Image (cartoon, rainbow, N blue to C red; front, side, top):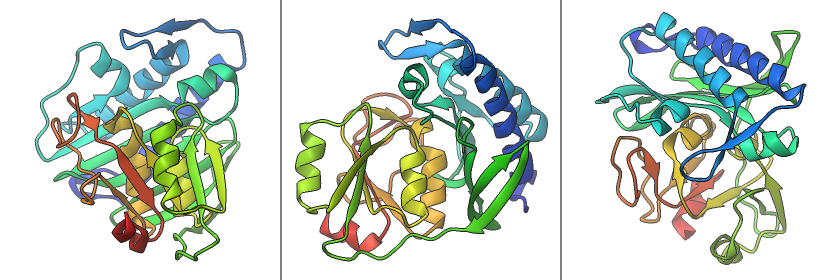
Length: 272
């Protein structure tokens, strides 16, 4: 496994994600309390534990690179960022975690000049993992007894009329999403939790993922990096690639996203 500029090694980031996943699963295996944040979204001990593990690990292996992490940011701790910073969602899909659907992930993304250049997405309940960095990837595989197995390069697939597979959020599908999808006449529409949707498209197993309504950049950065590296794209309503910074056009808050569409085949973005 290779490294990125400024000495950030993908192998180290993967190890941190695996450690966070181990922490999550210790909570998942027993009864746990669910609390609500100010925005009414759920948070559990697993979110906080995983973020603590990730923050400690990133500060150790990549000192000096700012980290924007969900739970810290929601508590008001948003560092100053310029061109290079991490975006971390320690437990993406907390609703799926709470409902015990297994469709939750650890997301670690690295941003450089507004673009996601490194991403690790790890689903600890299923063992699925996907990752990329500027010098190696994208790859997908599984985690077995703490080791990566069945690793293989991944690539998006080309658009074939009449064979379009669309993915929608299991917890956030609405009428606007359904109206957007109607423009592409998908043959199959499947609901899936967390950033696994980006990974499915990156692996050539689906074609489209629309998202209307508020999301945060830590929700998308890691999966976006993997999808872009695999040949796909994630675009804002104006058709431009999704950007990552404290303030971006169309977002309603710091480190927020506008509505977006993820495509496996960039030709579909032209239709959008």
